Amino acid sequence: MEHKNKWLRIGARARSFLIIGVALVITYVFLQNVSVVLKFLQDVLSLLSPFLWGIALAYLLSLLMLWIEHKLFAKIKRKKLRRSFSLLLTIILSGAFITGFLFSVIPQLTASISSLVNSISAQIDNSEELVMGWVSDLGVSRDVISAVFGSWEEIIKTMTDWAKSLIPGIAAAGIRVGQGIIMGLVSVFVAIYILFDLENLLNSVRLVTIAVFGEKRYAKLEVVRKKCHKAFGGFLVGKIIDSAIIGVICFIFMFFFKMPYAPLISFIIGLTNIIPTFGPFIGAIPSLFIIFIVNPRQALIFGIFVFVLQQIDGNLIGPFILRDTVGLSALWILFAVVFFGSLWGVGGMVIGVPIFAVIYDLLREAVHKKLANLSFTHRSNDESHGRHNINYHSQSPAEDSGHLNNNPSGQSGDHNKNSPKAVQFIRKQLKKWFKSP
Image (cartoon, rainbow, N blue to C red; front, side, top):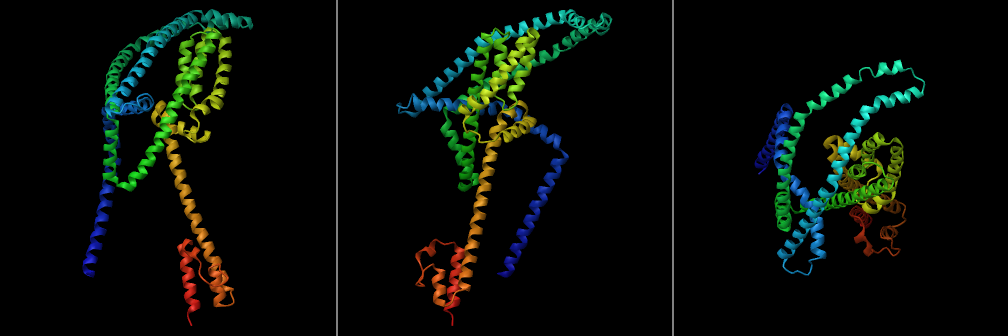
């Protein structure tokens, strides 16, 4: 038997060394071919991107669909019929919103951009006379002005040639837009299929997860899933609503004060407001530049308005809508935006906050659990040392037995069953010592 156990230990040790060796070889090969592996992963993600976007779209639409199903069609008993009506109404509402946006906002954006381009051209043509007028008021010699603007025509020619060189890139961008439209349609169909058969797909994922990881680990993964749902669902939906409100307020203000390019600038401010922390600055800088080209005085007024609006949003509107969906301080939100933004660009700035919120919540629970265990261990040690001191200074075995149980009569109490195991063990040993002759 001992001989057999010896060979079993040797076999287990050899298997461990073999696994470590294989892991080292795989790591070495990976490090030697990092670029090839990353290129392969990038190609795989590119192929799967329509399905990944479909899953993301299905998640966002599921929030609306489930609300409609439980609030409007709850009386329909047949589940498939109830789901069909809910999904159909979700598609109609989403399509109506997108169509209304395209037919109302896009034409105004196009007109604003066209007007902006024409205005820039006019400002370029008149910039020399404008600057010469400003500088002459300051008493600067016209010879200096002529020396500065002597090569103005060459600058215009260089900019024209540069614009012509962009034409091939614009054509390639048009092809990519067409491919993106096709992939978007595929993503929409994937999302519709997922939403129609949502429960069965989730149940399949649950069974596969249990089969691979076991029930205990699945329970832990389910906790993580719920945290992700709370963070992503609450943050993204709340941020979209918050940004829409900010865009509408900005449009009303600009329309009331008759500022130029109100639809375009309101769209920029609302869209960039989705990005936490840096979003207001990213949207305000180009907006101020656009207004400054037309009217510098209105640009100053608009800058003050944007600052006040962002203060109201950060202290009133945002906290009221988002409430405690992420549970992060301003420092950690800034860290998440910078870190994930450096990894994934603008998209990382948006989804980085809920991702970090989930990680932060899990780490916080792990730390609290560890501290609770340490506190319990120290408390048990303190109690055991305290009992030992009482027994050491007691006068007789009977008195010692009474002190051990907090009972003057020396009889054991029922509360020993609720004491820590370490304390119970020490009590039993002390009883044996005092009872021994």
